[in-house]
Image (cartoon, rainbow, N blue to C red; front, side, top):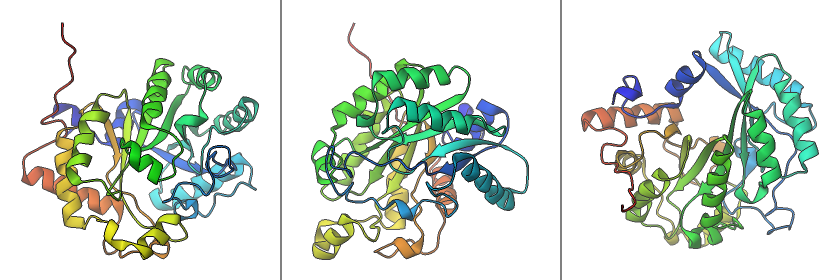
Length: 317
């Protein structure tokens, strides 16, 4: 447990302190990218659970220059935190490598030109990356903090089809390994509670992702967001969904991280959607940080920690 600096899991805040020696805050940017499963290149309609308006801050809009969005985001965070800090430009909306390399270099070089930006966090899909782009990000990572976050969501191939992801888990695994081979940090997002997936199957996922060369992970409990295909599916066939209660989720996530590689940084335990975007009853008015505190308290109560039962896979001699 000593690597966790007093916590019982490898926390994002402590990771930043180790990496930068100070607090670093992400500033969201909407650079006007889209997705190949929205424009018809792979599919249409997007992922069944996705409504980007549910998590895009109000100051983000593709009509604004990148620098303007960064400045407005910094002002937004200054009101909340009231102290000087450095920032990571967080390209979150849609697939932020889904464009020709020339456009990517223009967008990301503009973000890095801001004096308070020390790096990039790039959310994208595994089918929107190629060797040329990885070489570019690999070069950037030699002088700046760069992490590419992939929407893994699940390791179940049937679930990926059901979600209209338009790619396989096998391809995601391949791209994650290619990304780290270029010296780029990698992150992955996982959703827990997808229709048709059992709790035992989801727990087994800890061993699978533990063997990936991941820097960070984000966990999200499934939430039914308005104006999505999944919201319609939920209205028509609610019996196919087995959503976590708060109490169930805390029990589940504690078991999950007990088997998770302790070197992987946990960025967040839960997703957080504004109540006006939720098609189902939320966990009261709890914020993500409050749920995280409850999970930490349960870890302490059970005297357990991330990686307690993790066993690295070893190939035979």
